[in-house]
Amino acid sequence: MKKQELEKVAGNGLINRRHLLGLGLGGAGMAVANTVLGQDLQIPDWSKAPGANASAYGSRSPHAENMMRMAGNPNPIYPGGGASRSPLQHLQGTITPNALHFERHHAGIPDIDPAQHKLVINGLVRQPLVFSYEDLLRYPMVSKIYFLECSGNSGAVLRQRDPDPNGTAQSLHGLVSCAEWTGIPLSTLLDEAGVLPEANWVAAVGADAASMGRSVPIGKAMDDSMVALFQNGEPVMPGQGYPMRLFNPGWEGNTSVKWLTQLKLTNESPHFRDETSKYTDTLPDRSSLKFTFPMGTKSLITSPSGQMSLNQRGIYRVTGIAWSGSGSIRRVEVSADGGRTWADALIDSHQSEKSLTRFSIPWEWDGGDAVLQSRATDSLGNVQPTRDSIIAEKGLITTYHNHCIQSWGVNSAGEVRNVYA
Ligand SMILES: Nc1nc2c(c(=O)[nH]1)N[C@H]1C(S)=C(S)[C@@H](COP(=O)(O)O)O[C@H]1N2
Ligand SMILES: [Mo]
Image (tube, rainbow, N blue to C red; front, side, top):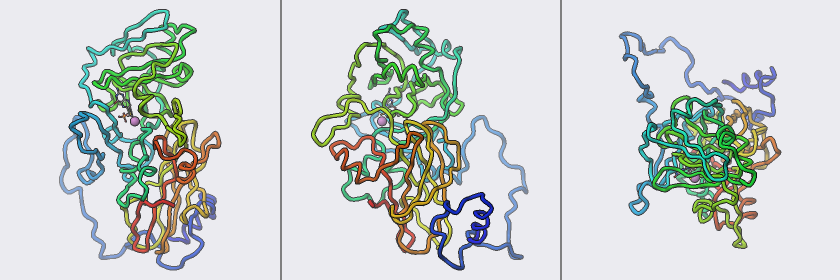
């Protein structure tokens, strides 16, 4: 689109002038399309012969196979421990395809036969219950779009004193994904068991070799927690907890116990390993916060982002994702000058609670240095903080729950790099 056309669209009220970043200056040569339709144009004919047959289970185009999760190397002293990260810089919209959802395992993926699996509810209940997978399929279910983020996501941006010049949206921030989760509200199952008044916590345990346990306050359990059985319409992937997982919307990913096998109602939290020695924020005075559940208000420009390059001056679509563990995204602002001036981005998607929201804004790159940043505001008025303010507030002893503004530097060669600004 030419600059004049963009301004015409803006003039029509489709996009307001405040949604245009850096478009005040400039002159000729701002067309995005390289080729103008001419007589020498050759369009390949793909339709000469019949194509491949329909298949039982789809696979993506071989031309799109560069979109891969990124996994660390296996660690022999920590078998099955590790993570794989979503290729955020390649994805659009808000839904992460199941095969590209990030994974974080503490002892690998168990191979569970749903016909043998059991979910037990016991402890401070009137009637302990055992459910098979078949039993659960008969309950009423809800479907909701929610993000899931590991509290270790983006930790490197705080940990590394100097910005990793090779850092990408995926390598730095790829421990967040978003899916439509279908399952049974946890309150339905707890009501059937009959929660006793002295029960304050639900202790959830997984059937993996890590026997991951997390405790969830009864208020959350009765609010929007669910036992998720489906992910984007198909059974949850083995890596996401097949045949069932706990899902706590908006909360640190670790609380959403995969391969869920037990929910025990207790008076006090059992203080599992993963909520004491791990996933706990230690402050500069060495005291530690007890439980940090909701993930912060956050956004990230996914394109242009680290390791990409701009090949010519002109107008680019700056786009990214925003989310909040406490509500919905109300506003995303974008800066091209390292946070000195901001313009409102367009919201391109739904703005569901505790889900990813897609934003974009047209930006004219004039061939000079720039620092691209985005800043999210949620429905409670929480504004995404800078890296400096997070460090000033929480120090650097632990780097969980980092939701700071990400800066992507653009140099005059058009190279995009992870920077601190
Ligand atoms: N049983 C079990 N549940 C688990 C884990 C695990 O290792 N075992 N990892 C947790 C962590 S740290 C995160 S961030 C999320 C990751 O969920 P995902 O792999 O579906 O993205 O699952 C959580 N639930
Ligand atoms: Mo995690």
